[in-house]
Length: 555
Image 1 (cartoon, rainbow, N blue to C red):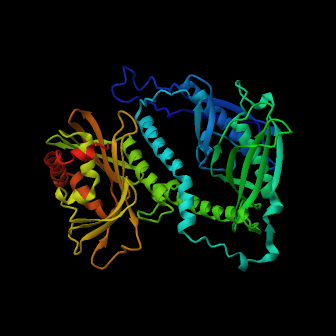
Image 2 (spheres, helix red, strand yellow):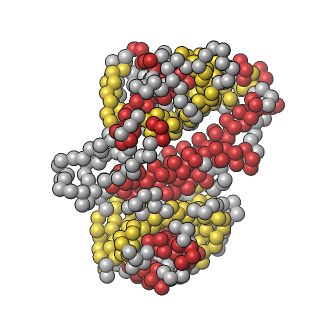
Image 3 (cartoon, one colour):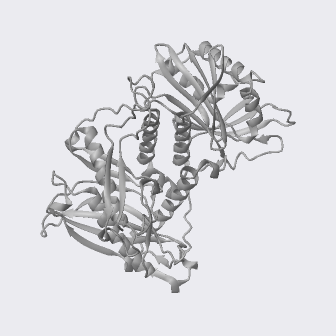
């Protein structure tokens, strides 16, 4: 304790420079987002846990406060927390004698807030390239939140959850009912905002307290909160309400356990009806002196509802592993191709689109050459060589989007695509293709690819149409002796509407080892295949721009 910590919240992060055409502002002046809020807090002994570290409950209060202040700056009216998608892996938040700063949070919390009384909010206008990227990726996070419950249902319906309860050591098995905790909190004025509504952060802190007690009843030790799945605020509570907080261990795995928490509210002791206002799932571990997770006892769920929670906890664990494997790791740690199955399709699709958007938003793109109004840019970053082709085409952006997003038509203009088979139409915006290409670069065998194509329409004016591509693996399309299996980590198109029947077409590709020699040959000017292919793409768009009138009505 005794350490100053700073929290920063904004609707889009700030950048040192503004986007082009943003007035007379220069690099030296700096730019600050008008919704940005910074709050400094001194970590006192009352904020720490039994290990002398900043308690997660207190951290959640501060996160919620800064997020709410930022939202109110944008809305111009009071806001309440509607949900907190805390894809946050809790760790050590600082101890006496160390330093504590925002860069130490292993993952930021994403808070979703709602304007008071349903006030219609004005659109956010991102100004810097970084803000535009985060604004666009926020739409992907929302898409992922909306299908989260359906993902759990589909996983339970289509996948066999192995519980092996009968084979476990009964001597180390704890009935789930013995971990149940129930607590009642009276909402007082210090717990509420100026509108009399309970602070979302205060409710989250109380939930973390009861969850910790429930976890300790299983492990008989001091548990450490490792991850928070999602806080879902179903309704408000006010000063004078009694909040009933219930927690129980849903499932215990080898080194971790999931605790489910729900909150109900009522006004008077005589009331029989309680309002369900919040729920969340928290993952705990028990660390030894070397900070290594210890083995945990097994949980025996109660029949009925307890068994449902037990299996849902297993499904959520799989989703957490998928997310960590697909979304959370650094690019250098992620295999080029990841397995595809229905349980991870949400995160693969999210990662596919967000990775391309982040590549687009990177700075330091260098114009390498320009031929016939086709520009070639390169970027050397994080041990990756990326290239970016750009041209302006006299075709409507929606038409170009429909033509380029159907990979089956790509062989019509790209000689590197010999054939394209639609393997699976996942949904309206995602599809998996098997692509074959001719022999390139002196190899004796052609290549083939299994590619996930994710397309997205603009979220707002000024946003591009996006077609993101990445490699996946399918058990039905394994590598065969006939082909060399190729892979792509991040590639695709971004299409900006520049005017009536005028579109800026940009193609991005993060070069993988299999095509690196081919890429460097073009970048060095020893080959003009890039330009030839991109001009063929332009001609393809011009020749087919009138073929899609019925389809354009849906865009």
